[in-house]
Image: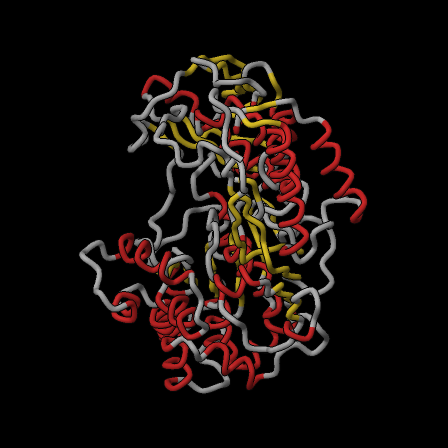
Length: 519
């Protein structure tokens, strides 16, 4: 159906799109009722949505009513894409936030006149409390836990064009009243949107030098006693695309050129294999890291995945191999369960798969990584060595591993998601400890999303096809850290931008509250 002359769609067209969403969710999501009270509740919610549709509505009005059909899954990877997702309106409010506990702190401002707000705590927006707004965000984007909800709220407040929806208004207010607690006193400030946010005028500062770059990187500290490894861009490292090409995954054609532009920036080679070969190598970086650790007799490895939104998680197995050989790889694989729903859209996007179980299952479930026993060492070796970089690691190292430090500590934040979260969850199988603000990802989570454009409104539904139990017998919505960066600890670190990383050093017994010293 086409739109009316005024840009609206009739109720029949809207109802058809709503039912198309429900059909798509059931057809591809591995647990389509997980956020609902079973199948009846999903269909009852769909029916209520259809019955509440007006005689006609704009795409924006339909989006606000239909988005909860997908966000009801409580899945960060699944959503109904907003109609203005590709908008050229790049205005933002001149401040950004970070989550500590249940609080949202101002981490940076783009207007020098707001510098005194840095480190302040957000209490309300346009008179509506943070608690109420965080609950409302969950109707527009899937929220996996409290920390994820706060992180999403900070994004909605900062990105000006999203404020209208957050405040349940047709359009965002021309200026926005924010209530904050700054240095123990509450105050209200009025801010206006801006496009001048390239460089912050003031921000929370890091208290010591960090590893530099955008790809995988590392640095040693405290006389070599501790090392920090930052996986970096998990959507753009070489071995991820090598494995994807070997599996015939369609995502390579879309994502590899974007990764090349981020990391290299010149005119890309015509051949995809040549393009991928110039991307940062996770395997080479990890090999250099463990060589440096072995040389310095490093006691502690800190893996920094704060604010890492994810991408591809196979590098976790590469790290496990260098630390503990294929025994470590098997322990990681045994601690994680995964079921992939290899629907036609999933096969097109992610490849045919290797385990061959989907064809025998009427719901397209590939249960090879979920059933008791999982993959054996030979299967794991076959899967991982599809990436040439990892194959080179295997050729150059003993299967017993290269260097195993005394302690592994993973630093997380509310923005640690997806494959970034996989590091924290899976490395616990090797005895790793987790510190920082709890991740926004839940121990039972999803990924490998596919999309479908709705027939009438043209909105895009994105739904995950894979489910992960990141830790054995997961309980609850949060991976509880061994040491949490609470607001009280954040204050004791003088609200430093790297407070979560400072906590990792302290937890491992290296710095006693002081910033670490680079090696």
